Image (tube, rainbow, N blue to C red):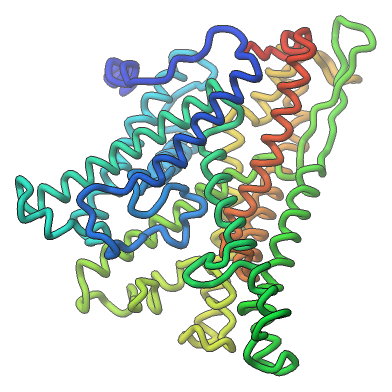
Length: 492
């Protein structure tokens, strides 16, 4: 008996959101999406009961913009467990170890059930060390004195809360995917990054007592100025990479422009209907064909590596080998392997002339090189996995075109023929697009952005928002012309 037969009784009974029967009106989809977004913001403000106030350290601080959630709230874990489970499934699927055919309805149910089981496992693997091993969510000693089980009882309560939060965000994502517009993961990323961007532009006390861009420049122009001569080395540095944030503004605008342009660059394969004369269309193969979402998987892998380093440092203390990693008072790596594998998050991480990094120039160059290699190669690899597992590969695309009654003019109406045509474009564009997105993410981090948003978070926000706009426009078009929904098989 194979693993599918053995696991089927469990996987098929995993709770899931019921898929709608028939078409969901566009207004109802917007209502579900807006409702889940309001619930998400509400839950990010529900603080953990039993947590020692002001003493928690955010393990995912550098990655919070892409892992969503909020430090010290019930959504402490954010979308981290979902993303990590996706990484495991992508790797298992890429190695063909699962033996699941996502086109088979039975295997689809098994795949979704397996994903939920893996999410529960990842909630435990992430949450338990966070609460019990590293002290990153310390229990209130005052409450522990009167709580059943003492400190262990309070820690168990804290873990139970973040586990419930991890399960809630899993089902919130599923509700948006089935009843709303877009995906819940994309929606939560947009929400978190947008908060940071707005704060970075307009807040008087945006991030760690640093004012936003416009209040800062209001003070520079009409207040006390920079405190140093503008034309001096210190003044220019303050204007561009310091409190003036000019480089961050230019980088943010440039990333917006580059992503929107890249989304519009495409190879369009002409299509014609086999039975309806004159009915023509085009199949677009975009430059960023796999979208920016595979970048979440790459950054989540880096986040898990850094999470492991922080846990080891908290457990081993001074006994941790120097070659493995050394950590400063702020919890960031300052040497060893974990330093070199830490992604560049801001100009201060590599501009050694700013005197904000104690590393030697050669160490910084190695770290930048590893980050670039990790993101470019990882982006290409995960983009390939993403395309194959989401039904966007040449074979799946050829079947979709065949089933829609379309064909490529000048070629026989045969799925194998269409697949060969698609293989000329999709694999190459997937690799190029994945590598390009990885390069853009590292470049944005190195130059800095408004609100200290990570380059990956900004890329994801722009790309997801652009695709959400396209999906909303498509939904509105199909709402006005129901015949088009039937032609493209949009039952929902």
